Image (cartoon, rainbow, N blue to C red):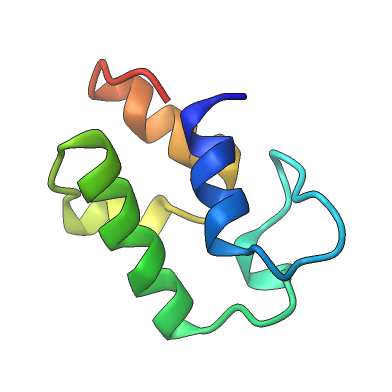
Length: 76
């Protein structure tokens, strides 16, 4: 399992269905601004990076997270 998939699974551990790569996090039940902050912190800690404001704004799905990490040359 890819690292970003594992991270999202941990963050949304109570979500009954898998979250598809293109599914917007905002469409997941229980998504709110606190969950977005938790996602940001988790990505930064797990991958040892500090996200820019632009990257945080684009962090809307697993696919977007992978693209952000790929642009940073970080395996996600």
